[in-house]
Length: 392
Image (cartoon, rainbow, N blue to C red; front, side, top):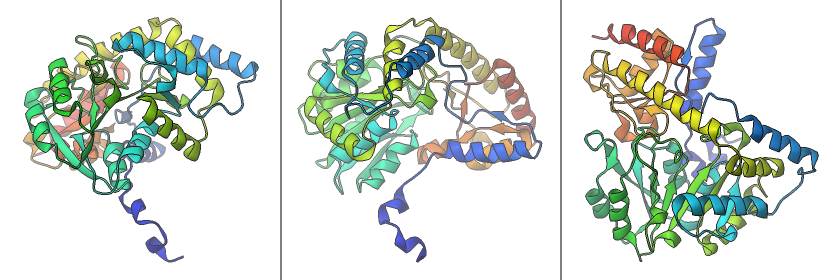
């Protein structure tokens, strides 16, 4: 074959997730006998609650093994609509819900549905790398807005307003935020809403960590009066219920956009897995005690890892308000973040991610997932302290 020339130009700008690359390197080191503590992957280390697993088994036995409507089984969309109505304080109908295999299709499909070549998308930076990847993939123009440590990793709303142009079609927000753990305030969201309300600009609000929040309550831009039809809520089951491998997510949006996202579902994946969808009903309607216990354990781990990081000479770390990531500042070492992350993996056996895995404004930081045991976190902190002490 003719090498790269055989492939479409869009594949040249299709990105990836560094977390999986680091995981592969860490696994290769483990295969050679090196002990590695995994703080790179963003998934809960808990098992899916038993009642949810039993619901899936029951659904399998009842024959939920076939195609479903592309937007999802009506009962499942009703359960999501009721849940979102209750938690966001808005009225949601089932035909405003699209069930997808994980949360990623909502981000990808919304960008595909809205963005033409040259259209601008404002997004937080650092941020989940698939946002920028999909903006490039569609031919859109990524417009990053930096998250600032002095604002507890919130964006400067005034700066965002200045970035809005006649070509702006979409603003992507993620709160609680990956990779920093920052949370946008209600006032932040209200000011953003004031800037876009009534204009041909959508907000894609990635709320996948909405249940993993430590201070205050989650607030959605869709809850702001008059904003519901301009906001797409992205949420799912992976983080709240430790269901990453189940691949079950959803989007909530106005009916017109939902019909287009459903058409993309038909073209790309047909539908989400039937018995998994039925397990989602149990997740939303069943006991929530396991999910709540998980958040309390994440809080305990957060406090331990942040205190430990701040005790390492040359490292400082803000206390994250949500999600399960620490984002320590390592600028004092005077070396690129990726070099520090590689060094920690090879020297200390601690797998973490460079802040630049999430965008240019992540330089000078690392991301550590504390979805691991307290014992492993404490050992990782010890190994990091020893390794970083050797950097001149």
